[in-house]
Image 1 (cartoon, rainbow, N blue to C red):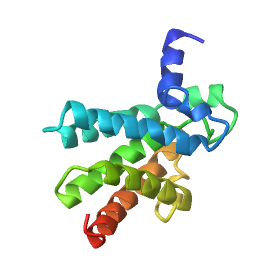
Image 2: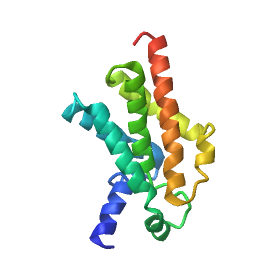
Image 3: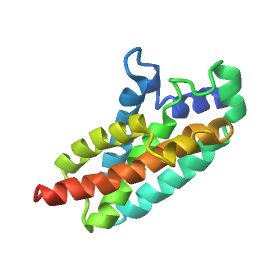
Image 4: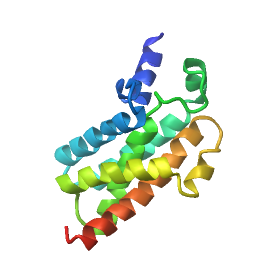
Length: 163
């Protein structure tokens, strides 16, 4: 495998988290948590811009990796491909912070993780339809819709609970 392909593999699998034998999507989402918290810590005054930029760049790049995915894994939506979960979690936190008007605390990060995983599994429309897009775009797109649902639900749930 070439150096470029190794770098692709690292990003797509969230540095190997997607290779977990148990629930690779859930384990891979932890890469999104690490990225979101790291950006929050490093750029607290500009974290929304950082999350949005990271999500946009990673979404565009991940969506363009169809050929690599097809030659690396025989499945249409391989479990090792977890960059979609990483970006979906960033979208969750971005939507939550934008709607709530404040940055997440530890509780919001944790509840956001579970909300995102729940909506990613449920695939509420139009997320299920987005999965039908061709190649890596279909792999990436449905998780971004799940991130929007999770961010809005997180805001609503924490508001109702008084957090």
